Length: 93
Image (cartoon, rainbow, N blue to C red; front, side, top):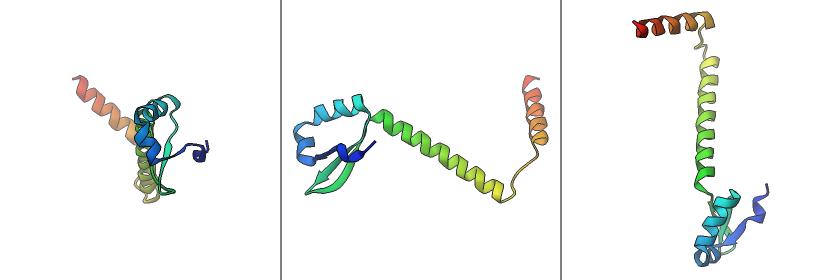
């Protein structure tokens, strides 16, 4: 997707705010807003923004996991499984 096709001046946003919001929700493509010919802001619909935030959170978790692996902070799978089983049996009691 090329964002250069979704560029509007701030005056367009001011004059057509409701239409812009409807278009964002329908097309789910971000809109680049310019002021004095320069890019100033990016607008996107809430659902896309939430998806982006979830993706960033998952990437952060993966990066933290990679750091732990590189630091040697790992445990054998068998130890983890037996620990989880013992916790599960303690909850059932």
